[in-house]
Length: 397
Length: 233
Image 1 (cartoon, each protein chain N blue to C red):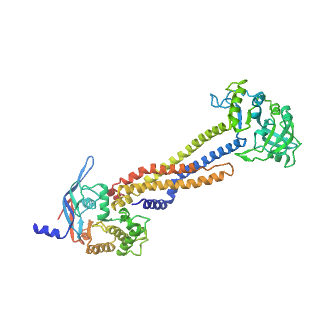
Image 2: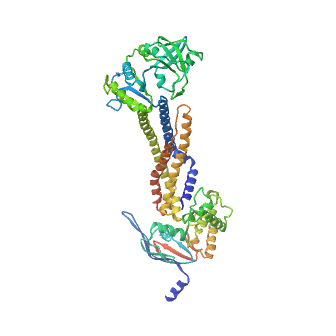
Image 3: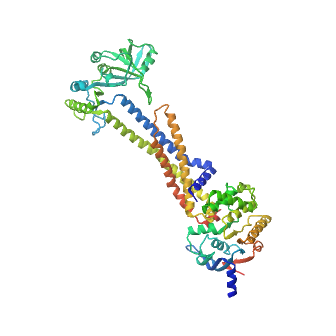
């Protein structure tokens, strides 16, 4: 009996028991669907974060408080010791090789006349910030100047969402808005950057770091951005920055992380996320496999007479074994195919709200795994069927 | 004695059982189902094996049909000693040499007459085209040429048994082994099936008919009675 005939036979038997077959493969369908969807979500998250970081420019590095890869995690229990002074020291030490900007980020409520815009990301930055973050482009007005920044003059550059929420599309340049209870003059609007993962990148306001420290009663800075002038300078700028910061701080107080290192950290995190979520989804594949085994065992018992008859007519044990094994594999593969279709469909649907990236390897892996599950859990029922004594099987009622 | 031997040579011996015993053993019990059975069936014979239930005729049928091995003694089928063969070899010999007909037809449900009849050929590796051709031909010969696509539940008992006969014949086996073939049929359709056997036998087919009804068995050319595991007179 050849394989093609056996597959045809398996399909006939699956179609003959439509309802039972579809319930049986449900576990596999859910498993494959969730593997594909979850992996697509994590991959989407990864490519979103990567794109965001890359939009800052490949030459950018961050000075962040605490030590990454040391005993404590970043920003662990240790107090933040980075100050505006560190940024100035770096500026002096790095000279023409790099741009430096200290940065503070807070969330605040903006007001203009009777209009309110809540949960606005307020970035306290230096004038150099707009050179470092290449993705930030001015739409109307201008960025603030060095003297405005250093004197802590209360001027603000806002994003398009703020313009929409507070001014309803009117020209905001020159108007005064409240950040908390202090008034700031709007001097510029940046171009839209869009939204992702529910974060509106355009609901932002940039003020000077000096003003931000006063505004929020903060004497530290959250991080310091450094942008090397050329890619070749990244390594030397990084080591020079570490040397400079060590004059005032210990090596546990800060980390200078390049884009490349940040991306590899994100890669690690999303890798763990993928494995964890994919693993959980894979458990449902195994549960699905047990379901298939259960149904196949029932089916073997139900078809005892058929097995007896086939044996009497000349089926060898291996023919019977193959028949039931292929039936199990066909069931699980069918579940896998439906799961792939649903997984892709759901990923595309979710993509409307969150970025998802469908990966071919998650499709191949989950399909392969579901077929494997069919083989593994199909063996026991197939062996039971092939070992049946034809005389007793024929007599079975 | 010489004369007999010469006669034997003129018509080939198909089945020869010599001192065949079958003993079923469990942990505590042992049951002697067949005791020193000696039996010879020649090609083209129509044999009836008759006996009450529990007489051992089913055990004899299982051995004759290569579904079971004898505990001792030899079974020679078409010149080949088949008494100690393994499961795989028995399966392929069954496929080629034996055509089974059962009391309850044993057709596959949800499967057309055409496909039911082809089943033995699938296991001997015959191509789909040739299978179809042979199945159509054989179904026509048993008078079911218009029921090719009918499923068992769309056929009468007599028609179902004809499908089963067609299935038994399709490999052109040496022996047609029928186990109570009329047991589930009314007397008229039962008689039809027996007449079909007679026609097949006239064309040269060897038929072994196992039954507990003497009235059915008497249709055979020769009747062997089994009682308490022994061949009676």
